[in-house]
Image (tube, rainbow, N blue to C red):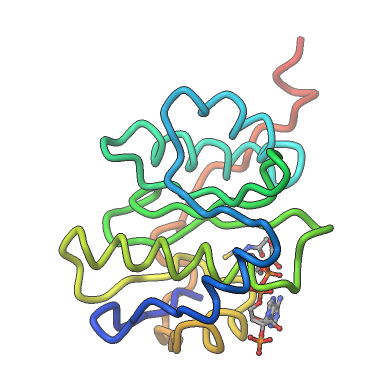
Amino acid sequence: MDMLVKLYELKRDPALDSRMASQGVVIRRVLAPELPALTAWIEPRFGAGWAAEATVATMRQPTTCFIAIKDEQLIGFACHEATAKGFFGPTGVDQSARGQGVGHALLLETLLDMYAQGYPYGVIGGAGPMEFYRRSVGAVPIEGSVPGIYRGMLPLAHPSEVSD
Ligand SMILES: CC(C)(COP(=O)(O)OP(=O)(O)OC[C@H]1O[C@@H](n2cnc3c(N)ncnc32)[C@H](O)[C@@H]1OP(=O)(O)O)[C@@H](O)C(=O)NCCC(=O)NCCS
């Protein structure tokens, strides 16, 4: 289901910023030359579809994909303006780094960027963990939004189908 967020009510969260700093996590906008490293990280963890969406977000100027880095390693990402205008997603955090606020910090940074780009509301496209979005930024479900814009989407090619 898609979810809606009031971007105009969001504020920076200094406690979350301090939490990231104390863990040595840097959240920042991805740079275009980082695109190959980004998609090489996303695809084995989250699949080719999310790598394609992150590619769209990284080919914008300014890029609309944010990354989390710890010890010079990518540990998470979050995008907007990928599948549709005003849409947040995809996002993902490495399994080993979950439950430490990184997903929340990426989400907030990305939604604040959407607001700065002029959107009053943001849509979480095809929200999986709805409780994560509700708790982190007060997102509410959009009734009747399944399958939404994903209606009739082609199945993703399985790697074995494209390797011959
Ligand atoms: C969803 C995801 C990005 C969350 O990242 P994370 O770094 O573990 O999340 P955080 O630690 O910042 O969690 C923030 C809050 O949401 C809660 N939360 C996180 N994941 C949750 C989940 N799957 N279900 C319910 N609550 C969740 C946390 O408990 C935390 O709550 P708190 O602030 O009350 O303690 C991560 O679990 C992930 O990569 N999942 C797989 C990919 C995915 O589903 N992406 C979303 C597609 S729409």
